Length: 413
Image (cartoon, rainbow, N blue to C red; front, side):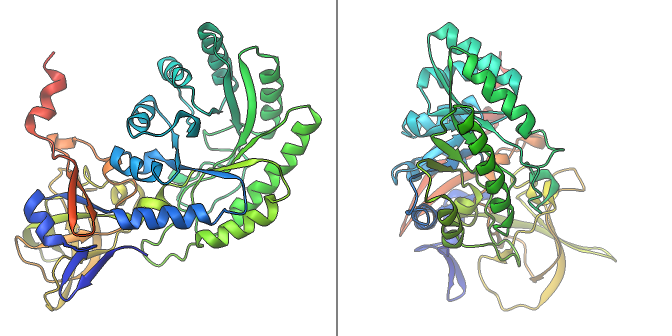
């Protein structure tokens, strides 16, 4: 459930009219619902009440510090993949002991920053990374707590760009190399192996791949126990999907029930790294129709949002439901919704049946709360959109719109 709904002919975010927010803050504009964020986080987190667990929001899904802070106040931690995400999370008030650091390419300075902050653990993805973490920790007089990301070779049946748990993917270690890694971790003086980690992909619409991967992890944990390695944390990653179009992903309570049944006998803390399932449907992107254009073969709506604002349709051929901010009752027509970027891949939707729109009217791209603004860029020297967080009948600007000075500031060296 989310708090975007029509009241009469007008689309609202909670108690605020989308058109009024666009008039105040301009377009393109990202709008988030605080009530939806809180509802989704609570629904996910409470689904695992039968387990000792920690819900670590995946910051890459939406890295605005106000969004992170909202979940932190509800007891959440974070899963990060860069020094910048660590910096954001600490600024948002996330306790270091609730921070897990994933990612295949951690830089030396980023490892130092995480050790200085005393995060919970690193999810290590290669033997070379393990050696580097050990060297840095020893040099700093620290002990680095680690888990290893196991690649279970499970097909998540999702888009190939967001599949991460198969042999051909760059992520994690296969079981053979994982055995070597844990043995080496026991030998290194500045390393404490405390966990095991797995993340098989994103936008999963069934729990079967999760359960298949979990069975493989549990078998491997038995091996580690025989090796004298005690595992305190089982990190199952994230990836639970949402509905963009006609998908029917499992609800968190179904996921929670299945995992609780498998894990309730273990004395272990389970870590989850949800991202999209929490924030995907908490945000929309509002855009103004700049021009309408008809050719012998196509009808176009040219809008002021572009692939630099929302790259998912161009990158993943993903579907975002698009609706008018105000219902007009006009007949529908088949259109491509395209932006101003000088690329043929610059579109929000293709061959979409939408009510006939006029210049100056507003369209809303739904389910844009995850991998929306966080993947935006300044391509074509376009300034990035503003972000607004709505709570009831109040709106707060949580990221101002960029200016031309912002564009060239780093170049004035």
